[in-house]
Image (cartoon, rainbow, N blue to C red; front, top):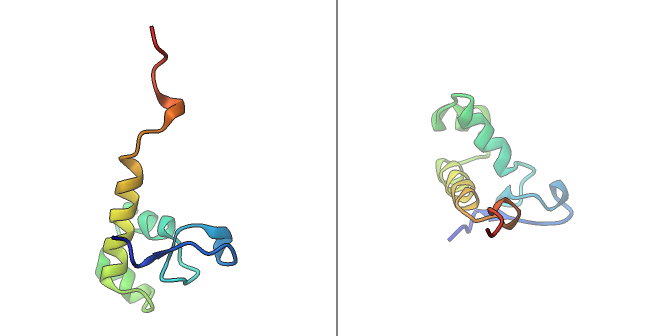
Length: 76
């Protein structure tokens, strides 16, 4: 599903990266959140492809959709 997202301990401390590069998913998401278009990002970072950006956003969306146990309301 996320074939462009990689995790390697020796690269960026094991953070989610794009295709084994020193380009984190969080950087890509932050660029989009700050108003950069896919075209702007690819122009600024030519090693990235539009599919990399799309998959980074999909991965971030999947993480945001996960339920985190310590945020659950306590049982009454």
